Image (cartoon, rainbow, N blue to C red; front, side, top):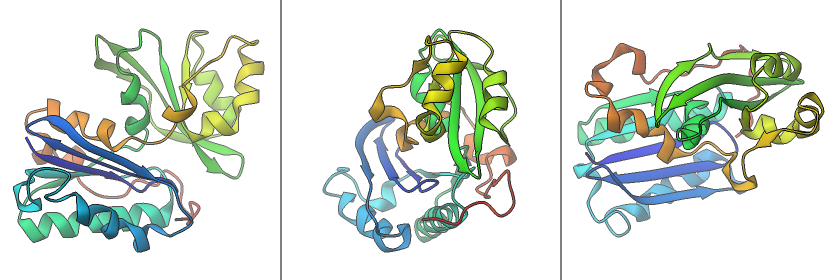
Length: 225
């Protein structure tokens, strides 16, 4: 399967392309430009030069559907829907938190994905994997960092995401210095991780649960790009 996956849920924009199920291109960009000004310029050079095939050969499109930046999500979802419509291919949405947690699907400890939601809150969910497969996920929620830590009650929990970076000191104190934090370069939402469910689940694009509609968790979420 050929896939294009995209995340604009946070200031960093992540793009991944798969050819016959294999990752052939991945990029993440951080800049002061809004997603609306850089997104198409980021995608255009990929096809066919970087990907090795044309945009019309993409079998499906995946986007982070939230939680995250109100404006960023709308821009990313609109872009993916427009591309999918242009080439008459399906599009679906995957949780932004999945795009963090699924990077650690081979971990033998719980994974707490935390995104900075501002206003002294985080978006979070706790995941358990077994041999690379998701076996349990708590409901996604927006809450205080303290409440997120109470959900991650296993002392071996791995913390990842922008929220884990912002509240690193709190996590360290809560775990009495035994915190497991993702490496510094693995806290962003990965477009490659977003594509994992689409690559592994038959009927993914046909499932109503994967509809490409924004999930904010909190009305009035920060509208930063």
